[in-house]
Structure formats: C-alpha cells, structure tokens
Length: 234
Image (cartoon, rainbow, N blue to C red; front, side, top):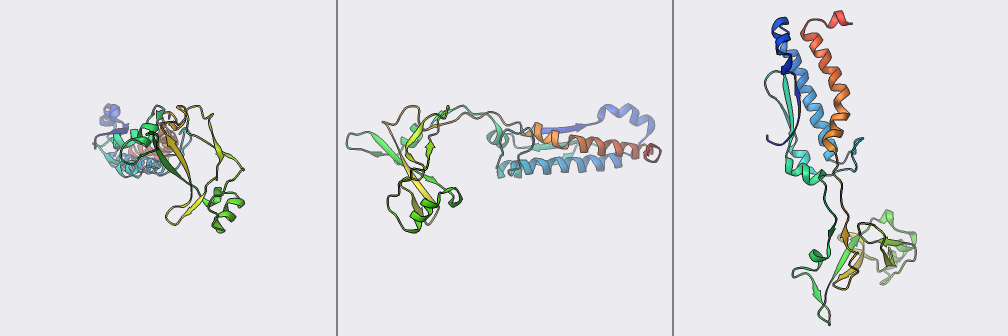
C-alpha cells in the first residue's frame, strides 16, 4: 500500500550475491520475519505502548489496522501504514481556541443579554475522586462543592485555574459515571478553553530503534547461512 514505509533494502549486495550464489530463500524468509516483527511492534505502539523515544502514548486503532508488511523482490521488505492515520495520531498541532466550536452551531444557548453559552460535561473516574466526593454521590447530594483542589483550564501556558473545586457540582450519570459541569460563554476569559499545542511524536523512529538491534543480528545470521558460513562463524 502507499504510505509511510520502513524499508530493509539489500539490493546493493547484488554483485557479491551473483559471485557467491547464496541461498536467497534463507535471507528472504528472515526478511519476512523481520518485517512481521517490525509491523507487530508498530501495531503495539499504535495501540498504546509508549516506546522509548516517543513523547506520548498513542491509541489509534485506525493506524494499527492499516499497518502491513510484504516482501518486494527477494531482498527487500516494506512495512507500510496509512499516512493520514499516522499524521493524525502522531503529527504536531498548534494550540487552538475551542470556544468558537463550543459556542457555534445549534448546541449553544442564549442568555438574557443575548450572549452565547454552553454547559460542558467533564467525565471522571471513581478512582480519581476523593472519599468526600464518593460519599456525596452515594448520598445523592445535589450540589456538592469540594475544596480539595482546582482544575486547570485548558490553556497553552496552563496557568489559569477554575475558581471552583475540581469536584464542585458533581453528579452521577448512569451512562458515563461521575461528571461535573463547567460553563463556557462569550464572556469567558479569552485565555481559557484553549487546547494546548502538540509536538510531533516520533513513533516511526521509535519503532525502528526498538527493533533495529534484533533485526540486524537476525539478518546477519541469515546471510551466514545463505553463504554456507554459519558453522564456520561459530
């Protein structure tokens, strides 16, 4: 398939190959195994495994399911993935103001003075909540206000905090579990409700670094066998 590729290309050895007449089948089998090993490592990274060198973990079933490998000729293996899925999962993005999206369209409401506002739910895990919040939910408290912390708003610098506690106004949704709600409006602080910039995540380089040592060793051994030198080398 077309896309981002990791290539193992040994065609430059053609002259030596013709002279010594090695068993290409042995090398081809190892190249195929190396390609599968690399593809599996890449899939694991796309399903959430953070390899050394990656800046963050990635969960992209679309990317993982697009990864494939195949032999091209006798001495080359290609491991490819959908470039759009890879860029979406690992590419860099600038900081962006979320307010236009949150206040646009028919989902926004209008206050008495005509300004737009929207109420945004924040899902929580039970394991992240304080004992006080758990007891409040168990007791069906309607307006629980915790003083146990502040939730940072999403800003590039991360230096703006909610004036209310992280658990204030907590509710229990039967569909999504514990939730709190915050209001975004035309009157919101211009520096609030920004999605932070994201640097590029070097997944392909991290995958190659993770498999390189093993693959080089395997292919070297395969060539020794192909030239009939394996026993002599040992």
